[in-house]
Amino acid sequence: MLKKILSPEECATCRICCGFDRDDIWEIPLFDQFEKAYIESVMAPPPAIEGNNDIYHFEMHFDKGDISYCPALTDKGCILKNRKPYDCAVWPFRVMKLKTGKRAITVSPVCPAIMKRSLGELMSFMDEDNFRQKLMFYADRHPGMVKDYIKDYPILYIEE
Ligand code: SF4
View (tube, rainbow, N blue to C red):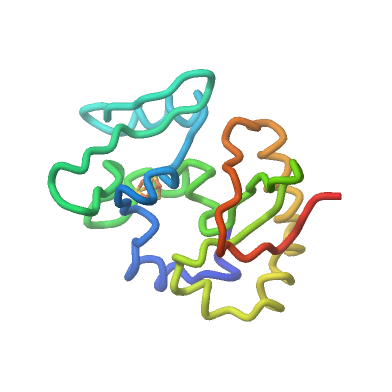
């Protein structure tokens, strides 16, 4: 979904979005019941998953060091390939809730590749293939997955 703004080569050599420390545990990918069922069907043994109300996430452990990697990450990349959770497929873009209650599309400053793009490039990408509408539609269907706004995340769009 992001190939027009992030090349597979850039992502393959980075993988920063698949590792989490205690401070960004809130960023671990969330998935719904359908994505959960797919994950459990392709990962053996099935990974430990927590959650309820159609919002799930991998159980993460921080006892082996500062960074805990997603259990779906392998030497060849994400084992889920093109069926990875939507949360992962659209990262570093996020729909977040502002203090005003409005939702905004933001971009994570943690992604080194996306931070090389100009604001103009990012804004144009919002209109590529209805990307902005797709993000907002998914947020409409999964309101519990919309995270509160985090300071320093550049805002690309605020709903009216
Ligand atoms: S599901 Fe795949 S893309 Fe998402 S964090 Fe895990 S390894 Fe990375």
